[in-house]
Structures are given as C-alpha cells and as structure tokens.
Length: 142
Length: 327
Image (cartoon, rainbow over all chains, first blue to last red):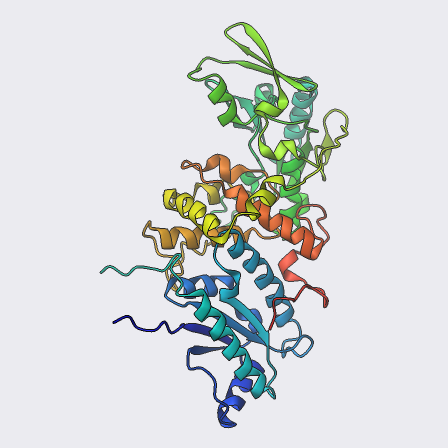
C-alpha cells in the first residue's frame, strides 16, 4: 500500500519573533499542520544557506525561515541580511532546476499566532503539491 | 597590442624597489599554446616576461596564496609588497579582494595592462590539435595571427575568444599603479544571452542538465584553488565539525558543493572564468556564476569588483530590497 505523502518541513524560526509567534499559536490552541519541525535560531540572519542545502540533503522537502518584520529585528539588521541572502539562494536553486518554493521565508511577529498557523498551512500545501524532494537527497548506504 | 619592452622595463623598475618582494606575470610556456605564470625576484628575471593573447590566467590568486609561516624568535614579519600583472578582468578581482579587506592596498603593486581579448586554450587546442612546439600568437585588431610551423593564419577573434572576452565591459584595469600602454575603448556589453536562453527551459530540463554536470564532478576542488576570491582560511567543505558536506563523491554531495561554491561567490565573482578553465571535468561553472551576477544586477543594482570603498553585497542591505517571495 502506498502511503500518502506527508511533507517534511524544517523551520528556522527566530528566537524573538517567529518562535514566539509559534509559541503563541500553540498556547492559543490554533490548529496547524504537524509537518513543520521548528529549529530555534537567535536571528533569521543566523541562517546560513548551508543550513538550507544541508536540510534538503538530509531529507527535508522544504525549508521555512521565519524572522521579524523589517525594522523589528532584535539585532537591528539581521532579517534584512537574511532577505538578501535568501533572494539570491532562491534564484540559484531555480537555475539548477530545484523549485524555489521549497525554500520559503516569512515575517511573523511574536503577536501573530494566527499568521504563523496560516503560513505553515500554506507552505505545507505548496510542498505537498511539489511532492517529495528527490533531487539531491543524501543516501546513507552504511 | 602591448609593448613588451615597456612591460619588462616597468617590471624591472618595480622589482628593483626595496619594498617589493616579487612580481608575478606571464612567461612563455614550455610547449604548445601555453603561457605560464612567472615570478621575478631579481631585476634580470624581468627579461622572461611576456604579454600575448595566450595570457588568460588570473594572477591575482597569487598574493592570496602567499603562505605566512609562524615567525621564529626575533624574526621580523615580511611586510614587502607583491607586484601583480593584471588585465582588465583581473584587476576587478583585486578590487573585490580589497573591498573585503582580504589584502591591504599598500601590500600590492598593480601593473595594469589594457587587454582587447585573449584566447581560450581549449578552443585553440581544438583548432590545432597535438601541437607541442612553440607557437606565436599575435593580436591584430579584430583577428588573431597564429603562427604554427612557420605558417601564419589569421583567425577572427570571435572564434577563439573565451565567453568572458566576448562581452567584456572592462578592457582597462579598474585600479592600477602603473598602466602599460594606452587605455582602449570597448563597446561590448554584457547581455547574458546564454543565461537568458537557459532560463527558458523547464524545471525538469534544467535539473536533468545539471544532474549530468554535477555527476561528473570529482571534487578535486580545482575550481576553488584557482579562484582568486576563494581564499577562506578553512573552506566549509574541509570543515569536520560540523561537517556540512561529506567527502564522498556522489550526486548529493557534489550538488551541495557546487551550489554552495556558487553561492559563496554571490556578489563577489568577477567572471574571470578561472574556475571553468581549471575544471578537469568540463563542468560549466560559469553558468551558475553568471546567473547570480545577472540577478544581483537586476535585484540590487550591484556589480562586483568596481569600487573598493563600497561595502560587500551580502554585508549590507537596503530597506526596499525585493521581497515579493516573502509570505
């Protein structure tokens, strides 16, 4: 029997906004898909593209990066830098034939539990449509 | 065409200075269509120096390869400068390194050469296969005069030039201490024709293409070592803790390496094509670099290697950077 595809999404959430937003979504008992595995980083500017590519290699079907709204960054400019980086990375992925929608970025503040749930729903549905990431998944053969 | 006598005189004068350690330039290769890097430590070494259309290499990599062994007790650090012979494109690499503060401005003496286009070694070897004796190549306006076995052939430049020269916007060095000859004018414009053509393909076609290319990679890291801008003290692929990219040669790791290499050159690659020339497996690495270059020009109106005072692309931001991809 073929199992239904459940996307595996890694979320890099910034400690000050998105992670708190996810926490609020949880404490407010808002339902959202359980496909997102949250990893707390201190700032979205901490997310090195190497993390994203490594996640895709290790079996993630998509990556979501959550940061503070522009201007709200705890470190003043981390989210702006992350935005530039991800813009370039997405173009590069697109050029090599990997759907850039597998890497998503969002601004969620600590008060936006509802928005966080909406974003996770949208990303999960998008990646469900794209199907499993098979381009360069790492094969562990030992 | 560059006056070689003038070049030799300048090199001789530079190396005679007390504060210059050595000058790196080009000399005739030992066989065939080759020019090799050459180092002058003494004034008489300057006699070897040449400049011909065969001088494709980007020599700016040498000041970056400089080893700095730990000093012995009582030993003074060597603060002498290094002289580099650069073409237009190579000078942009130096500007980029200066911008990132990888080198100090007063540690290099830049000898600039206006260049009207060089020859791609792969293309000329395909045209004259198996030649191991020395050959003469001269630059004649819109043609290269190639002398093989005493016979001179004139070949249109477009047939032999690498891609970078066909769309070169900077034939004159952007930054130099000494300029050899006169500045030349160029009307060439970068139009990203190949990138645009590749973009029209579907996702599946693109991946099928790159899958084949990345599978060829043997991970010799020649692209990294030849690149003047890949000078991290420890490259992320050599790191063991955490080990981001494994050493095994397979599609997954090769893709990760090639994507990350291209990303690390985002906003830094100056398009000297040194990586592609060094690649023993013939992977079209410049296709990735050019794509990023094009997108950066469109999105951030930024070009690498133009001004040493500007901040590096990914270390600065504008509040109104494009963000249509953000949810």
